Structure formats: C-alpha cells, structure tokens
Image 1 (cartoon, rainbow, N blue to C red):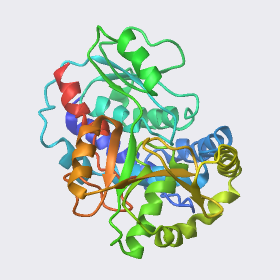
Image 2: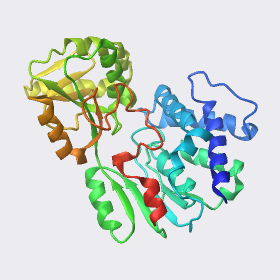
Image 3: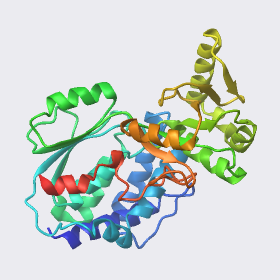
Image 4: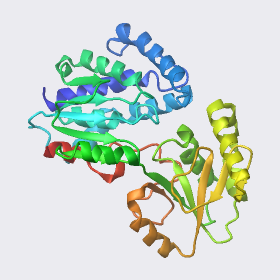
Length: 352
C-alpha cells in the first residue's frame, strides 16, 4: 500500500467523522459506505456515553470535530511533508492507550498507520467503543488496511516497538517491561497558565475552555495558574462563570462536593464560586473541579522554573511570555504536528 492510498483512506475517514462532529448529526449521502456504518456509529456514540460518565455527548462531539478538522488532505499533507515516508519496512507497533478523553489515542493510531507500519492496539476499558468501529470503516474504504490493524484486550505480544501512555506508576512498569524494545513511554503531565493581571475578559473566558473542557481530565487541560503577588482573582471568577452549568453533571458535581469537603475539613485556604475551587499549592496536578495557583516574583524567574520543570508540563498558556506557548483557549485544539510531550512520534516510527 502506497502513502497516497493511506492518506486518501484517512481523508475519507475524516469525511465520515464530520457527519457526527456537531450536536445535530447530519448524514451526508456522498460519504462512502454510509449504508453500512452511519447508524452503527450513532449507536457506538450512545454506548460510549453510557459506558463512561465523563464522555458526555458534548465532549464526544468536541473530540470528533477536532479529528474531522485534522483529517483533511491539506492538513495531513502539511503534517507529513517533512518526512521521508515513501519507503519503509513495515513493523508491528504496539500502542497502549489511555482512556481519559474520547479517542485520546487516535493520534498514535494515525501516526503508526500513516507511516506504513502495522498496529497492535491495547485500549483502555474507559474508551473502547469508538476506535474499533472507525478501524472497520477504514478497512472498508481501503481494503489494504486489513491485516494492518489488531485491537486486543489481551496481553500485548509479538511486536517490534511500543508507544505506551499511562500514569507515573504505570509508566515505570512500562519502562521495565518494554526495556528491550524501541519505545515512547508517556506519563502524567499537566498544563499551566501564566497570568499577569493584564489579560482581557476574553482571554480569561478562553482560558476557561482550557480548564473545563473534558472536565479537566486531559494532560492539555490547565490545572495550575501562575499569578503575580496580590493578584485579584475576581476578574478570573467572573470570566469563567458561564461554565456553571457543569454542575448539572453528576460526576463533576460529586467530585466538586468531595474535594470541597476535604479542603474544608483539612482547613485549607481556598477560593470557590459554587462550582470551581482554586487553592495555593506548588503541585502541578490538581483534583477535578480545582486548579492550583502559585505566586511568582518575576517573569524571568518563572521562565527559568518552568524550563527546569518541563518534564512535568504539557502546555504553557500565556501571551508573549515564552517560546512554544499556547494561546488562551487553544490547548484542546492541537495540530497533527503538536506531539505529546514534544516527542516526534513519526520520526520515532520511521527510525525503528
């Protein structure tokens, strides 16, 4: 199978996904194999929402819209242009996926197959409805993919390289278990925002998207704020208040109530507005419904600190502060070339 054929298959997959990328699903009769797959995928979306309480329709639709936007001829071509993918000896690559947000492992899935390798997928039990169905669609639009995609619930065996994502504890296990294989091992990372007090209301409203999208469960969600001494949080709380309906979601509300109770019983100082809390803390990883904050003395000193602790950070949201920063409101809209942990997975796949 040649590279143009692989690209074309994923473009067609993007056309299929695009039908489901809005709250109001709209069938496009021009999409191939809709007679076989359209109603089935609607059912899978329902199953995914029922199986995982964090996978609301809104968040699933957001994820599908992101992938529909990425799986176009122009975007895929721009992404792979720097690489020499035309000639490759196909290997079998095991991909162990997380399950914190819908289709969180799809970029690895795409990277392995677009580079010409075979993939062995070990899904999280939290996110197992969507990818197998999309894989079948991919095999229908490009039959040469048959035999290239294996999804298993069993122990991964018989592979040449591995990409694995998990918690810090799981990552240590991965590093030991896969020590004799070429690998990319990812662990916990969190995203931060650097505020100066000069942000506009629109900036802070956009920041709320970085905080609340997917309930804050993704590594690209902002879980910590760096603010100058004597920062006034009133403007921040006013700008994020439009997210208050998030309390209508039982899982989020339960976490909010629990974490608030823990803080109160422990007599921790914190600020809250009825659906969200902020607490001064040097840690990067905050509980659901909470963001930590830390004061800084100078932006230059903060820049030095963040560079020194880069292994704990996925994204830095700021405005004209540091290289490779992310604009407010954009953390959950990565491009195909925005690699997790800044590790170029396509380069890795072409080297094995």
